[in-house]
Structures are given as structure tokens and as C-alpha cells.
Length: 452
Image (tube, one colour):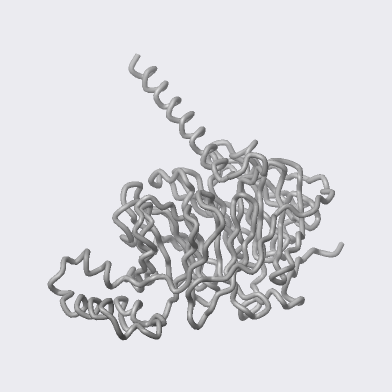
């Protein structure tokens, strides 16, 4: 009888977990009529993917006024879509089949392969060497060139939001929550398949994480949402600490370094996007002092108070000293909405830095950043992410279903399927040296397809 009751409890827990995961996937839709489930930039922020109840679209912004839809698929409801840099390779998950991952060649309209997992897929991360699938309590690390499962991280702390991040450079560091009650970050070397470091980042659970391109720095935010921290991945030391605000009920939805790691931007469920400048201070406490100051900052009672606090820092409680020594936002952008999930990034468009914000209600906002003075960012253009419908090609699937253990049950492709694997290898070639510029026709969009 006890075994029967225990079995019922396990079944109930599984049903609740599945429902919760589906709600998390669908929860990004802000407008029921719009039906947008997912918005996300690719690894170098040169392409934008939008998943909705009618399929998914891929966009590129070649100029402030020129948003171009480069692909549309209207076959099914897509809740996750990730494009590999500027290649033809995309990984998608549909809301109707939340346990199945499809890897597709969107330029040809074909499906290269698909894999099924034992639970709902909550996140997908890609770089040119690895593809990571995140479930609520496990992570699967694939070799992206042939999609073999190289390693499985099992029994991770409950991660219902699928929070994880993968470095996009030469190293393949993978970061994920090490606890569901405090803000511990586990960093795993997905290239050498070994644990790297554990970083105690926050007192409360994690809400967002991001590596810079080289993987040397990791930015984190907690569920409290008031403090953003940047750590040295090599030794776990804290490099910068910024105060986003004083509100306690703020949900951080994205963190992103600029390609050159000069700026770090942060979006949340509020109407404000913060941009922090990552100067190179002598110590973490000097980050605020290196920010540009107003012309009249040397006078007035506020300056006197700041100096007095600095001189008496040793007499104050440590927590209060931290508040005064934390850096503030270098620039801010004000959105025409709040309460909607959004993704942000700082990129170079026609050699000029811009702040991009993509919202789950189906809009892309382009802001001007004054890189010398900071301050309020000016809204330059608002784009609606609808595009024009195009006719898609029927997919050709290679089914490699996995029921419980993808790492041991995935069947390798047959010899006649080698052409499609060569397409994947084609798409994962190393990027050109130096930052990619959106105004360079030779670099964007370099969609590679194999000639027959």
C-alpha cells in the first residue's frame, strides 16, 4: 500500500512538473492576439529569432531603419528557437512537442535531425562546438558536428526556468544554477567535460547570467534584481558590482555583454533598460569613480555627503558600505511598456553602437547610446516583428527518438545521411577574426549552403 501511495505521489509530482514547464515556456507570450512565445538574439547579436503560435521568423537589422526578415516557417507553434551565429543551422522546440528538439537547415527548409528527451526542454544553447539542452533537473551536452551526446549533468538543482548560459568563444564554458535557494553558479567546461569552478554570486536564487565572448567574465543577477555582479571566471573573484535599482520585486529577463565587453546591458519587467560601463578600475570598488561625472559634480551638499561617507566607510556596516560603493548605470533607456519579457544587447550597426531591445509582445526598439557621456538613450526606431509570409518547404526528418536516456540511446546517423552532417560541419566553421559588422555584406548574412 505504501508503495502504491508513493507511486501516486511520484506520478502527481511528474504531472505538476510537466504542467509547470509548459506554463514557463508559454508564459513569455505577452499578447494573446500576437501569440509571440519567444524572442532572442543569436550569439553575436546579428540576428533576431521570434517564435510564435504560427511558427518562427529570423530577422537581421542591417541599418537602424532597415529590419529584414530573412526566413519564415509557419509549420507549427515554436516556443524556442536558436540560430547558430549567421549560419543556416537553427534548433527549434514546439509547444505541441516540448520534449523534442529539431535541428534544421532553414535555408534549404530541411530538418537535419531530431531528438526526444524525458522531460520538457526549457532552453537550448549553441556555439560552434557544443549544443546544450537544458531540462529542469539535467543538462545534455552534444557535439554539434554530429549531435552525439558527450556528457550528461544529472540531478541538478530544480531549474524550472531553464536558466543557463554557454560561452560563444574558443572556450565552451557552461554556467548553470548550483542551488535553488541561493545564488550559486556552477561553471562547467563543456569542451573538456570537467567542472571548472563554483562561484557564490548572490544570497538569493539566480535570475540571469551571461558570459562575455571570451568566457573570461560572467555577469549574474538574482531574483531580487537590485544588484548586478561581474566575476572573473578563472578564480571566481568579483570584478564589478552595479546597483540596478532599489525595487525588490524586479524580474531580470536578460543580461548581455557588448562584443568588446565594454558595456553590459540589463533588461527586466520594468520600463527601464540599464547599460553599465565596464571600465578597468584598480579595484572593484573604484568602478563608480571611473564613470563620467556631471559638470557640477564637484560642488553641492551631495558631493560633500559622498566624500564624507567615503572617508567614514570603515565606521559603517559592511552592507551599507557596499550600497555606497556600487556602480550605477552609465546609460538608461525607457521603454513604452512594462511587465513584458524582453531581451537586450549592445551592438555595432554601421560602425555605431546601438542598444537593441526585443520584446515578447513582438517589437524591436533601437536606441542611440552616447558612449562618451551616457545618460538617457534616445529611441531611434520601433520595428514590428511581423514580416511578410513566405512559403516554406516541407521538412525531411531523421528521427532519433530518445525515451529516458539520450546519452546512451541516441542512434548515430546512417552512412547515407553523411551529407546532412557535412552541412552541420559547414555551419560550425570558426568565425572570422575580429568583430562582425552588420554593414559588411561579405560578413552578413553569410548563410552557407552546400552546392549539390
